[in-house]
Amino acid sequence: VCLGISEMENFSTFAPLSPACEQPSIRLLSYNILADCYTVDYGAFSRPPHKEWTVRAPKLQREFQPHTYGGPKPNVICLTECDRFDDVSGLIGEDYSGVWEKKSSSYDGCAVFFLKEELTLVDNKRHNLKNHKGQYTNQLIQIMLFKHNVSGWLVIVAVTHLKAGQHNTQLEQLRKEQVHFLTEKLQHYQNEFNCNRIIVCGDFNDNPGTPMYESMVENFHSCHKQLLGKEPDRTFYAKFGDHLLEEGTYDFIFYTSNKLQTPQQTEQNETQKKEKQEEEQQSVHLHPVNCRLMPTVEELGGPIPHGPHPSDHLAIYGEFQFKKVAIT
Image (cartoon, rainbow, N blue to C red; front, top):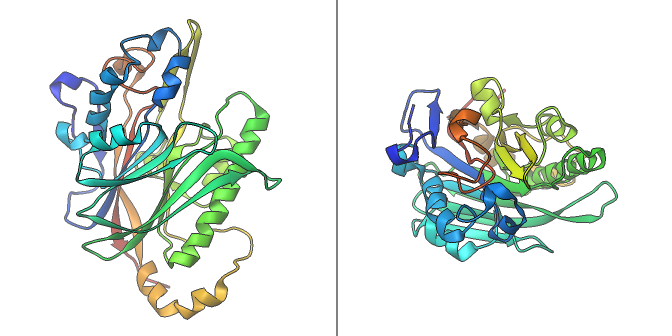
């Protein structure tokens, strides 16, 4: 177990559940960093200095580089609510390259950074999510295809930020519809990229047990639940105004190495042409070996951002090794 640096008490704990080894891995950090443009909307908990960028920036930098306080160094960093891309790129460092996709009608968006010495970006896609009527929404999914430089294995990494709004059945249904759309897109790219291995993460704005979550786990495993037997108690803990306190488990790292189950595939012929190559690629699955433990309410010391925490969300982390399996 890796503990935080002394000046960042209760900042982070990691839970490696498999023996350390030199196998190739994807080490992914997913984080809603609280867009700078949104800090003005928050109440008493986010009054200066907690909401000032100059105060939040060094705290974000520590989150982006968990190896500086004993955690594993991520080779993929997926961000939601990213609106100061150039500033964030500087905080993450020159070892990483990043791609930012802005929402259609907002200042913020999703961003993915990858460690250049370990991963090569092969392809990058962006889609606005649709509802069940086929209408585009302001939310998006960013889909990246990476090649692991040492092993040569391919992996699809996607980040999304679903529609916000709790205690609203219509918005719950919309998030379920957005999940259906992103699953269809990911299935399409499984075929196009000839790669079944997918990690999809981000801020899903809904708790375990909701229609969104149940739709996701039809096709995906959750990294935290697979390793710990349950989801984190909370990844979001905020106070709006002087009275409304809200918490939830909204952030997830999902994964699969299997074909997604959605309506009839449209590119079977192309897939059949690559059957021999595909069999070699699909014989390697993603195997979760490490995740980040979330702090308790007592350890947080109150709604965030405050203290060492620069966002109203907590960063989550998952590590996946490439594990060869028999094709039956």
